[in-house]
Image (cartoon, rainbow, N blue to C red):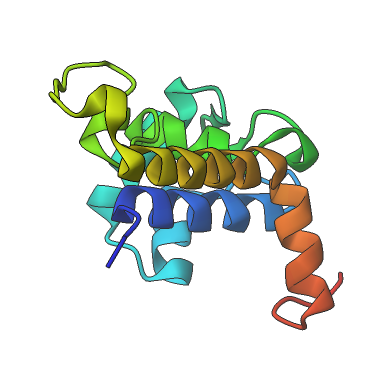
Length: 145
């Protein structure tokens, strides 16, 4: 089974939760409780998202995390690569080029993985937090305020 990491899954859930809070800061504890994410692990994820420019931290009483830019300007791809780095579905597609294979120049399977990786990247680049929220509202997962 092809799986996304828990960093990406939890990071996206945290970013969506923050986006739903309409610019009011949310603490790691509040996000942890509402999403069922272990707080210590969540803190590590939130720090990475902050360092990656997706979140800003607000200090003081009532502080926490807010989005650093509008949800329509944050893609799911940006969240994923901030947390895990470039996508590489197969060793031969490693963006760092650390893998050598004697079949690289004549591998039909590589063509398949390359096509799939391109499609995944394009989908994630084109899907913004704003679109995720709109789809969730349209499907009844969340309710308009």
